[in-house]
Picture 1 (cartoon, rainbow, N blue to C red):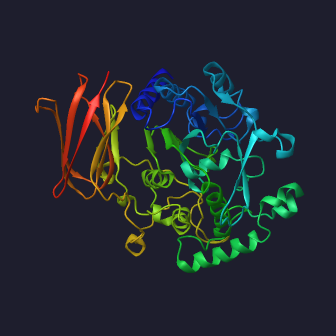
Picture 2: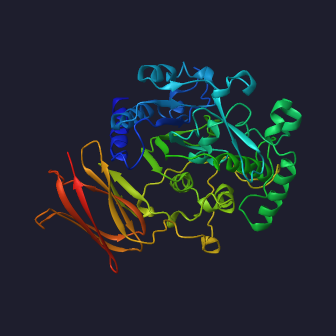
Picture 3: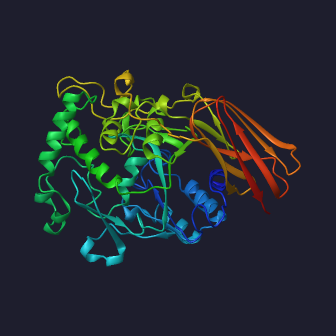
Length: 472
């Protein structure tokens, strides 16, 4: 428990830096957090299985307190699933001892809550929704959302950062994992105003189009029940994209201290049980789609086989599909070191995602979705990290009082950074061979004295410079 707390606290204190009043977020910003605190069985469930079902409590507590150490003081945790389990799992107690605002805003319908308890957002171009209700203060203007999903299998594949955001919405707005059903027949009429009257027809039309376009496994049918199949997945993805389109996130994470295979709730292929693995990894980034693509790959799957990533591109919410097009870094002691994707250790997690076959003959219910995918046919979607002009600028200082800078690189190549003091002497130098284009974080770990400094950065065909005045 202590080790997990301290590791998370350290990570947060490195990721979040103190900046000047003109940059970044104010310390009055409300920090919102969405863990994956789904239903995780009763007291009779094996505790080892529970470790792989929900986001680790010690990690959340340590991480949020690490952020608090930097400056922000108001923290809000929101979760839609099983509020009746919160006390037994220790989540209520954890929130109370830290002063985190944890409220149940999904047990009641919107008309039984106070007006300020929900934030309604119009969905421009929505397929399913006209409007979505979010648990306040989620999506409010003065907030920064820390989205911490769990590294585990699920019938949607790997239930990563994108899907985790499903759970920040209000009652009846998030319940779309349960199969194909007509809300106009099953929901109270007071909810009907928020849905397009023809959404089922839209879903069927889009499903047929995507089957014809060749989205892998999209032609599958439910096996052994009403849940599953390509049409079901089309409905879930479109509903999720509607909500995601109006959800600004600050940082997206997948906590994988322990990972789990199976259906996401402890059921799996081992005499009916899932398995928990000490995967010991945390995946994070600013873009939820990129985080999830890498998470799927690390779980032994081929991301191009998942319709979520295709439809995210189609709807303008993502621009990448191939995990090898995403720069990946190892984070250690506040520094990010670029690494080849294939060098990372994978933890295969079998899933019950879109089983191929029919009732008589089909693949194993729990399987890897690792069929080879031809990414070359899906290229040309835009540069992953577009940067037109090279630059370098100071962002602030981290918890160790080290200067953190943002380096913008327009093209791949060897990059050199020199920092000179006011006498013109080089006081720090960094070499970064084969640096990817895009924006990168640089930590000046040799800083010791305030003063006037000049920073020079040079690539193979370009250079840039900036003068910095650093105070204590």
